[in-house]
Image 1 (cartoon, rainbow, N blue to C red):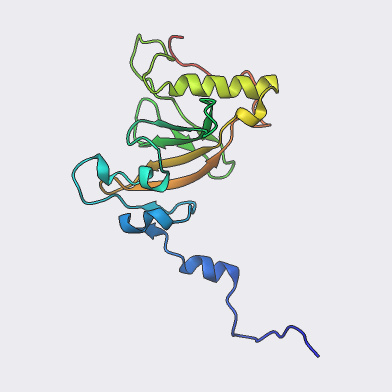
Image 2 (image 1 turned 90 degrees about the vertical axis):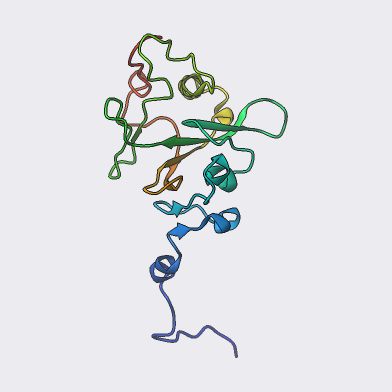
Length: 184
């Protein structure tokens, strides 16, 4: 006769197991580190961009900028995913994550007065505009990339994972979910 047995006091709850998982990953652990919300991914010890942790977590990712896009491997030039990095410290343009609703407010990658909002080398604002156009037209929805959101950590080049974001929100009308502040 076979069956499952329950050994009281000898099991760990899922919560207890998750609490044992380190919420901080050293630079040497990054290649195999899982993405865990609120976890800290430590930067390296070198005083240059090789210590940047996000390009280790995400191969082929750039090492600077707010929008860091990795294209699909099919040669289409379409984004496979985007890592959005914020310091969360801009006083005039305060990026913000509402932890209750999950809404993330991001002010884009062009904060220079008098400059066209879409005119940036990494073209992050243009990527956002294109993403929201696809969302609202209901065309090419499979071409909308996921956005992995990170913020600057407390020490050096450390980064903290805030979560996975998708564009749009059923509580925000399409004419208000992507709003330009400044010149277009």
